[in-house]
Image (cartoon, one colour):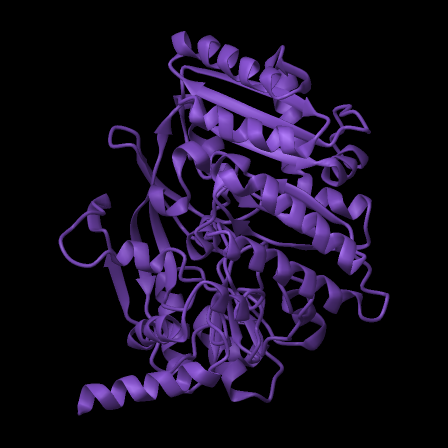
Length: 486
């Protein structure tokens, strides 16, 4: 029996796609099955896809893409669906190409410190697969236990340790990509990323699935550091904690991670799965980790303790054991999800600011919270100024979701106003499209959409993401083309 005969649909496109992926077990098209794919981690907007297909390899991805292109069907790729900016939401009734079956660790080359994975391979599994040999994969988003490396590439994901080790783009050596017309190309062949010509690796990484679909990834892996130690510091005032962050960096210390949570965030993490006993009346907690050559760790820890004491720290101490260090990090890593313990709904924002502006920006975010009547928790990568205001709201109350979106937008405007930007690791998706105007002129946005049209001329691949709605942009692009012709 042919694959199409096992699919009970009158839609010819569903039948033809089913034939490409081998039948009913590799395609979803009934409404009750599609509901699970109507959004990603950005749950405020929901749209049903036309179908979800599950290719097993690059060739099937290419055939699906070619079919969609030839039949003018919108499509997009999806990993684990953990993205927080709506990048995988099927706004246009897309065919979703799910990468979850493509989850192999293809090869590990420790001599050259690299590994090759399929896009559906879970981030943390890579470290777990090579840790016994003394290696690890550095990018560590909070969702690393379930997010996929393909999705990390799309969003240029970061994590707590990106202060010292960089975000995803700093660890990508090569990509295999299916272009929007179905052509398969290799970028950074043989794991050599710095070939002559344009930086196509950098262009594809962070393009949010609008330029092509990544089907194979060559990543850099690192040797485990000789030593590692973590410090916990409690502050009665957010300003003192913020200033301690700047002082640590100014002292010439580059921690592997430098995290901060405010009082509302602490309330959440203490009410969730991994409480550690943070004082209820504390205004801020810093979690600081240093790693490197074992002989230098204690000296760095002593410097950090001294800096914190000069900033009116209530209590500061180093982890007494690996178990205690792991418990502190588990508490921090559950930060976003922990908000569900104190609020029915929450909106995660993702802005970046100069470190020196931390006290000012946190004060302005507190003002936005007061004016909106919504609590805002702050959990963030303080060392590199990557803020995550979490706007708490109740979607059951009419108008609160809209109020939360507006408060989140105001937080991003504050970040832009002090010389920062609107995202550090979560991407733009649909959540922050209009906020792109906070940091780019209309001409700059038009220039970027011109690049997208080179790769994705039909705009069938993940349309409506990353850039603002056309309006003025479309007029500028037409004017630019007219000027070029004349």
